[in-house]
Length: 222
Image (cartoon, rainbow, N blue to C red; front, top):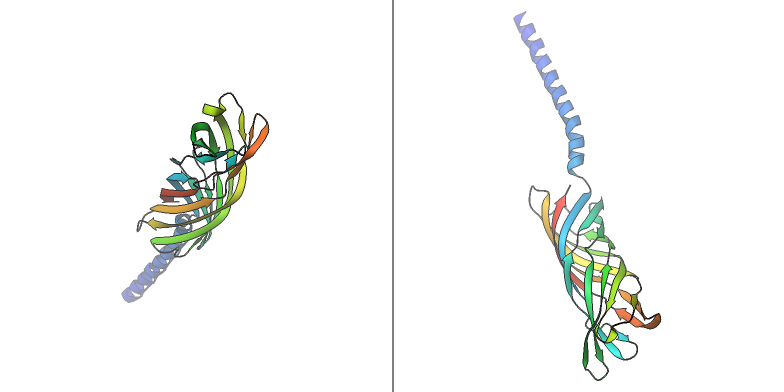
């Protein structure tokens, strides 16, 4: 009788243990799903380096756009292990425009403008499960141009720049700290940015920025 009781007790223990494992599996499944959230946030700093020659304006002046540094936050969503969609945002950048006449004499700073360049990119990750993951991406850039100001030889005139829409590309990598939601990333981007300009309502040409953008970011995976 004692052996029967011990057998029943042992069987009850095993059944209870099996039930506990089953319940633990049910509870851990949604937790694992939460741990694999597709969302990522980046907070970065980028340097925008416009191409060396930015276009001939009014048929007489070669333009040059200054390089600038600013904050570039981004949000990513992972659609598949290797495929990520990214929206790159920015604190508005302000650039100075200097002019040089046809004989090579600088006319100094003649204008400035601000722009907001959100970029939408589809990225391919080569090693998504590894700590070090290089990637490439292709997307579209929309640049909002505003707050144009004039000075120097353009003092007293009204300058207006048209918004820009063009292709964008990126190469970079992310290093994720092992057993952590944090990482760091670095990338090099190219964006096709051109703005048609008017001065006092008349067309004066196209300002071609087409920058190379170098960025570094702190990364947090949800």
